[in-house]
Image 1 (cartoon, one colour):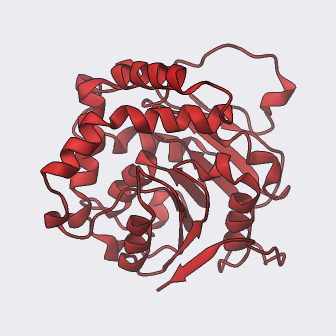
Image 2 (cartoon, rainbow, N blue to C red):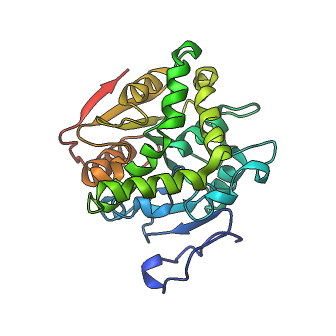
Amino acid sequence: MTGTAGPDAERSARPDPGPDLRPVAVERRTAGSGPRVLLLHGLAANDTVWDAVLPALPADFQLWTARLPWRTETVADGFGAGFGDDGLRAPLAEALAAVPGGPEVVVAHSMAANVLLDLLAGPGADGDAPGRGGIRALVLVSPFYRRRADEFDWDTISYYLNDFHLIMEEGIRAHSGDRIPADLRRAMGERVRDRVGPYGWFRFFDLYLRTPALATDRITLPTLVLAGGTDFAARPGEAVALAAALPDARCLVLPGSGHFPMLDAAQRFAAAVSDFVHTTPGLPAPRGRALPEALELQR
């Protein structure tokens, strides 16, 4: 299948082939025979953002990761004229279709969570239709969401424009475990921001600006919204508001975690996803794992 690793392929079993520059690709990461779980990375990240949490997830999960056009390696070429009328939805839909049998659970981080919401609630879409690849549940990680248009003001735009590099720095911090000095992180964050460029920033912020008009009532899939308690990019209150706006959702805030809870709190993140999947109707039965140090806010 074009853009898709073979069903039994595992990254650890192969030599490193170097950067994959295809616009969209998916890869099977584990040999589990349970629910098919697809993990989607955010803007200017890549599928390595999941590496810390993969070993902590249940062995029965059939885990897949996607590489999308807005990833680190291709973000400089992934915006502007490169997208058609379907915008960011088309490559994400391609990734969903590339998983053999389609994913049953989709875990989407940051901007990818917003693209997924846009896809499932967009014109002509049915949030839980079989045509969406048989998706049975969603996990939205650190999504951006505002309930009303008047919640956006000039200060909001200034913050996300002028301090956009701080979000890039946060990703570097989470990946490096604070091993990179602050001044070097800043320089690296500014370099990544410049690679994203104005087109990439606009694509991100346009998605954000349109969240008050998102037809959340159309997304009836069971949904877990995960947020970091110290996230300064997608603030945890926005995750709580999104969960309240969805018909069948609950929000879990992980204290002490930032915009990348899968890196900052891998064990708690994995426990939350595991328990959610194992308690969702139509998916495997629960295994009784606890959610330590988590504050649950359920509608």
